[in-house]
Image (cartoon, rainbow, N blue to C red; front, side, top):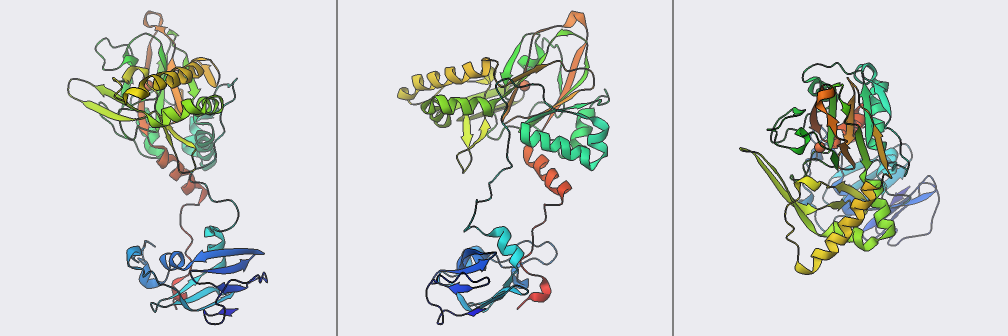
Length: 396
Ligand SMILES: [Fe+2]
């Protein structure tokens, strides 16, 4: 079906499959019974014509800012085999395949969400799912199952990890990349009276997220128990996003306060320093929680506007009460060779007190970023490469 601006100056109600209508600033195409609309500037911007792409990588060469405001088709045709063929008024011809148009249609149906779906923990949450180390590092299915669990539940335990020095780093490099931060690349957690962090003490570690003292805190934490023979010290995990969902439901004004008031956090040693000031909750573009920062031990004096201070403490007290309530909490014993994986922008981690005289307790941990784990998941699923709108030989 062929259209030109002269032939079809306005939208029509034609819903015949393949019907193409050219409007002043966009076109409408009926595909699978749906009227799909695409702006001219968007179509031109997403050209896969040879001059607009780097041949070897598919990266964009076309410069978005150079597309003229008056970009529009000189001619446009559509048929199911060839796709949408457009000759633009800047002289470039482009082809857009039906599959590509379906995948990127932004005019009908639910919009593609920016992040994968998550499953919030119930109030009586149990232990995170467990996966055998040999499966996770040795099979695609096993690794995908573990990645799915981290994406969906925010936590998973890998069992049977060799109790070798820095094995946790080897594991991280098998599935992605270590996020290096100040202090150590691999952190040792054991009783150390000279340690730089409360984790080196014997006391309870209340559920917290690590390093909100970075603007972008590490978003994945891997905690590898080389040995755990001490009495006590059970691991505690809390789904912070589930706690925030309750807070948002029960007291939207408290939730809004925690999204607004910046809180400074700091972690330092004799020769290192990390410091950042952000609201405890960051939302994504859909208004969903993306990042929770919660660390009692690292908080610094609030420097909020005078009238915000008490509102902040009210909201904080409310959230802390939910986190301490036992709802959305998994409490379990981690044994030798367990590697606890946590999506640490979501799930808080902690431990109960322990007695070092009763047995050894030593774990090593590294950070990663969830972006890399989600990327690994897309690669293993074969989903990561973009679909070209046209093949090189289709260059018009
Ligand atoms: Fe921690």
